Length: 261
Image (cartoon, rainbow, N blue to C red; front, side, top):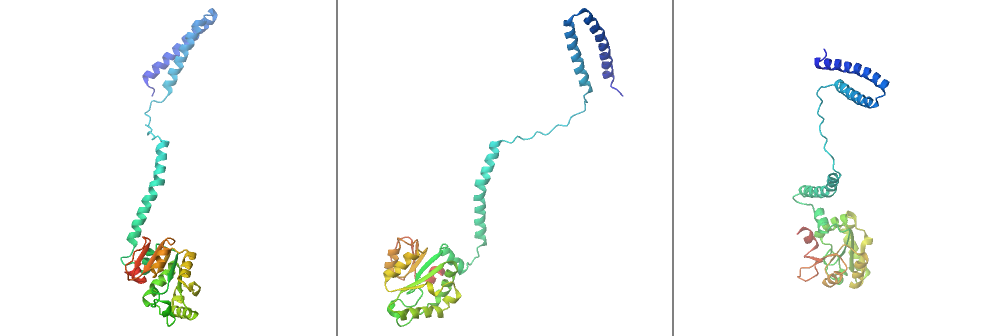
C-alpha cells in the first residue's frame, strides 16, 4: 500500500509537469529565454526530489570503523621484534640451559667448561702425566699417573691434545711411549703416538708450544710457564709451590685437581 503523503506529492509533480509543458510551449512562441532557464532550473529541482523519493528509507547498517595503520607504528613494531625478541629468546634459552644442567655435572662437562671449549691443548709429561719429574728419572723408568687417565680421555674428546717432553736418549722415548700405550691412552682416546713430541732442550719444548699455538698449555716448569705467558692465551701450571704468574696462568697441585677439585 502506497504511503499517502508520497501519493499526494506524485500527483502534485504530475500537475506541475502539465503546467510546465503549457508554459514551455508559450515561451517558445514568445522567445522569452530567461523564463526558459528558470523553468529548466525548476525542472532539475523536481527531478532530484523524485530521485530522493525513490531511494529506500530503510535503516542502514553502521559499518565498523577500520583502524588506520600508521607506517611509523608498524615500522617500530618490526624493529622491536627484530631487536628485542632475540635477547628475550637468548635469556630464556640460558635459563633453560641452566635448568637442564644436572646437579652433578659429568667429568666431560667440567673439562669442557674449564677449558672454555679450547680446541687445542699442549701438555708436558714430567710431573703432570708421569710420576717422574726429571729426564734423568726417565732413563730408568716411566710411570703414568693412574689419576690423570680419565681427565686425559675427556680432554682428547673435546680438544686436539699434544704431549711433549725433554729426554736424554732414545731409550727414554721408548719407555715413555710404552708407558702411555700400556695405560691405554692411545686406544681409549683420540691421542696417537705422532702427537707425543720429544726434544733435547727446554727451549726446544717451548718452541714446540709456540709453533702449535694452542688455546691452553699445561706445564710444571715455572720458567717455561712465565716465558710462554705472553704468547699463550691460557696456561695451567702444575705445582705444589706458591708462585706468582700473570693473570692468564691458572694454578693447581695436579692435573686432576684442576678439573675435579
